[in-house]
Length: 517
Ligand SMILES: Cc1cc2nc3c(=O)[nH]c(=O)nc-3n(C[C@H](O)[C@H](O)[C@H](O)COP(=O)(O)OP(=O)(O)OC[C@H]3O[C@@H](n4cnc5c(N)ncnc54)[C@H](O)[C@@H]3O)c2cc1C
Image (cartoon, rainbow, N blue to C red; front, top):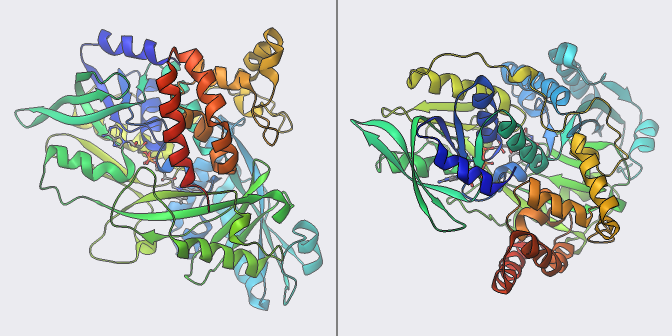
């Protein structure tokens, strides 16, 4: 996947069947689906793929135990089916994760146990393992740092886990293999209409400043929390459909949670669930749900949100963490769909919503990472209908994602590359220095940087340290320390000069400071 090649293909197509705005989980899923059906498909992303909410999730491929408690069986059943399909179609990027719900009151074990048994039932043949009951000693064996006072045992169950940004990159590569053109750093700045029908989009290349007019039969707005901005390009009086809500996660060293089992705290003081999930030799703890007024590309956590997470971690675990123990904090914005006037975003719809404007613009938002495939199918079906494109059936339930391999060895540090791993090993052999690590605390090597620039469209230091490698999300200080050597090596590969290196180091350091406690 190479940006210059993508740009040259942009000029070769007179009119696109489907133009997708937004390169997060939703837009990338749509591009894969539309291209797989055989439509001429173009995806335009303003920043990098998954720069938005899609790199800032809890990293769970799940049915949503919380939605089960709310009685939303349809949503849970659909998400569990999608969970099963994703684990099957991307085994190198996903895995089965054991979870435990601790019980500190006699009734909790039975209440959550019965609910989770239903969760198993709803997953049917795509289930990941059986829910079971644990006594206190068994629970402590699995999570030695669990709070012992009043512990009566717990429930163990299984869900899916993944690396969100890496999955996004592999989805972009899959879309390209299916015939799509995908471009990062290409911002849609306007929509064009003729006789009130949408005829294309205006876009600006943020790397070279060039403007493009791109004719299209159908346009899909998949811009997450930004959907209202695109709707306003069409109708400045559009009331908008999204109520953004922010979710914060903190990342800690594994020593504070030395286990491979994840913890699910079923009821926090604001009646939500909170997770502590092992991830890349660290533990991710979150999340919050705080309504926010404005949308920012780098949302910042509120102090209360950090204290809330620390309080609950320390209440259920004996590790006793404090703010200075945090390695990184990341914040994402949920695109919750408005349903009248309510100040509480926790009760707004978590399902996806599709809006078809009078011009034929199809807007899709809401939903979850886990359900991206079903969301994409619904969006493409709508676009095909509205633009009167010839109907073609969706086959993404069987589509193996880029890198798919039959046997995955989780102990192999390159396993998430799947069938691309031998390409990295080949680079190590050709240039043994490229097998050295960027940083002693992380397994990433310089050959992977080269691969990210040459094959995965990494254009900036942030693309590399935040999404191709997850160092910014795991340890913000380590990422800042790497900014200069990474910028220097990338500049050599991209043909950029000294001024670019300087600008990249300044802008990355500024962004990364927002991830420090
Ligand atoms: C805190 C949190 C935790 C979550 N955890 C989970 C989880 O564990 N599991 C799960 O299944 N789901 C989870 N979700 C939900 C999931 O992350 C989101 O539903 C999903 O990532 C939304 O993807 P998206 O593509 O719709 O939006 P985004 O990822 O935000 O993508 C929209 C993209 O559009 C681009 N864009 C905007 N304007 C333009 C323009 N004018 N031109 C071109 N591009 C533009 C943006 O740059 C952005 O990249 C979580 C969400 C949050 C907030």
